[in-house]
Length: 224
Image (cartoon, rainbow, N blue to C red):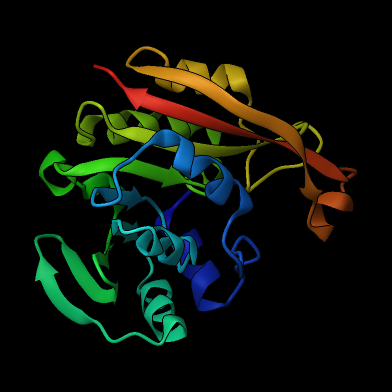
């Protein structure tokens, strides 16, 4: 899946994956990770996710990365927040202060260009729509790079969706428990926090025979 696919989705406002409210599984499970409120949290492929606002409200400084400048500018516009823009290596940095102790910086550019120094002080990661946005051949590359740039001890709250991929195609793509273990198990402690029936699927999935999908939530801790 090429970068142009996602840039075009943002240009044409084909963003059915965007959630207008805070994610319920984030609110339910994030506190169980025990990530200190003053710690930095990373949100990969963040789009204009309002979940970054929720994390900032908890006292975290939030670092996102997003390919589309349209998405980044929309985030700050919809939040009604001013921002400062600067060049940060290969990225354009957009940074605003939202809550006391809870600033949000979004690096506009390619996730795969991030280096360990960029995430050196990250303690937690929230992945709602990154892994499931990628086809199978890219998910290994994504997980490998994420674990390369994260410091030891960093915790990931990972949300996945599960359905019969032979019946319908993503995105979002189906990511089953055995794949999560294969992607992260060699270097991380992986535990499933919950598994439940998901929300009704979008019309294009229902038209292909997929009415609902399972949703799983994982806690992943980088150990090596």
